[in-house]
Image (cartoon, rainbow, N blue to C red; front, side, top):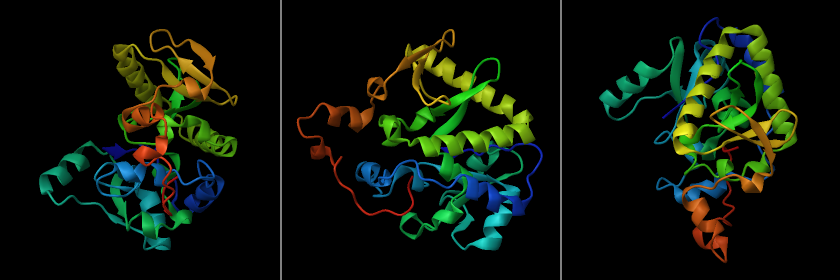
Length: 253
């Protein structure tokens, strides 16, 4: 899977990323969410930091900024050339696939925007209104955060929203990019007969009807659970599946 960033058209200058990163730096939560999902990954790493599961994609000028300021990142290549070419072929024009040294060597100040936003993306209505954060549903059985949306702090939500408000104002063509992605989510969840989870920009939690877009206020405890997190929630002692393991990680969240 590829983790997309926002720009597909006009570039943002490389030197601007220092300010963009500074305005979007707070972690999702005070706890180490990577330590909650890593026990379920056969590779032992947080899923979001493991390119067996997700490969960050950055805009070319973001890559220029990272190259000039850190040795954390390098260009990504799979061991199988065919897989490398396949992922490169679906990456947006002007963006590159990158990989870091690993979660144990993370330099948090130089996390890519894809890292900072994951597992969230800006959800847009049919009319193109950015109303809040929803999730990359492909990772719902792997990502602990997707199964515990209540842990996303208001500070994180505010920084996410301000960052994308600014980017959409500067690059209005990207509104259509995420409007189409949100429409794809509605089609997927419509076939599932399932509501879309939303962290609204007003601070509330909502379920969005994929059929008509109607928003119903809810509590995060009422969102669906997936995979091992659903199983763990039904156990007398959730720690039996490793949910209580707070291993020390530096990269996730």
